[in-house]
Image (tube, rainbow, N blue to C red; front, side, top):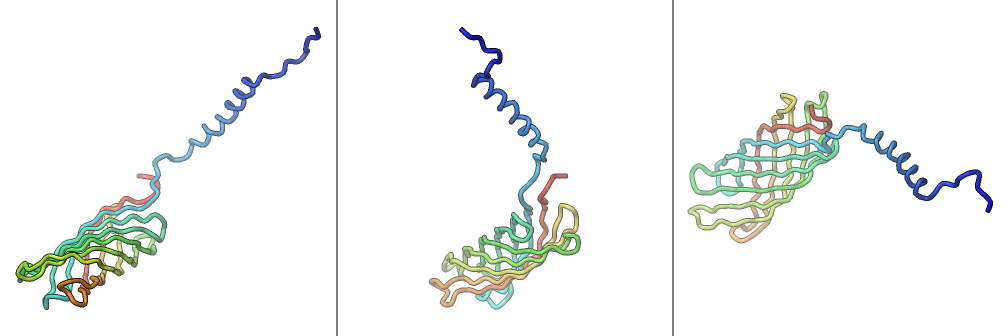
Length: 191
């Protein structure tokens, strides 16, 4: 029998060698930040004043909103509005969701935006005769202004087109002015 002078590696030792070599690359890859956020989030509340397109006087109330900007210029928004007529039980309530486009100016302090949304509006008729819900499309323009690293204020104009339905022949077309304040969770590494 002839003895080998050099030993050939077994399959098991080859696998172990490859695993050790590849683990060095994997360990090096963990040097990146682990606490980063993928988007920019803000949660806010505000005051709403509306021309209801049903009662002759302006109606007012409150609003809430949430925005999530997943890129520098594009994001998603959810809004809620409640506007009441002080002279009757008439109110308009809306739930809206959709996309927004924004720009950044002044070292990211000023953020003008435009949004297009779809939603659902609830209208309470005079004398509590009916309370009906309608689909709606919404367009708005406004500006978020950073007043502190974590606080934004907002001013916007919103146009709603409530699609036709029973009780409102041509659909409502209210116009709203909203002002609000939001807590801002900026994208990137937390501070």
